[in-house]
Image (cartoon, rainbow, N blue to C red):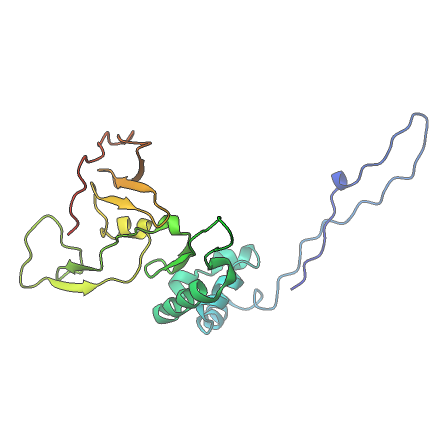
Length: 216
């Protein structure tokens, strides 16, 4: 929907010579844009309309104005299969996510995360991320104890470092190498630090491990 252009007083710069009387510019009216037809619908009807949209459409609509940004949560509303298909297609087909191979300025392309369903820069991904993990009967990642019969192995799709820390797929003392070659480590308070720039966490005072801990 086209938006009306609102001019402000400071958008104009009129000369003010001494002893001159110039006509003043008319003050533009500061009117708020009228709500769209969808915004005027009852909330339950709006949510019914949103439930019929795919992930890409929800993302686009959420950027249209403040109302849709506050009302639409594409992550929560879209179907997981639709989200996975969209980020896979976006990482593969959208020009802004492709690698740059021109001249000496090679830059790897962006990658998709199948946990937050976003396409992110290669600096957000571990080059050696685990391909599988074990979870217990509650669906929690098994760490710090021997495996038991009730645990089961699950295969992992690509995920970003932030999601890996959040879901306990990366743990404190893990050392990571991003797809751009940066060395990272995870401190005891589960913050991702860069090395060798930061070898001691200023928050938890945890030290970077001298020897990378083997991942589970």
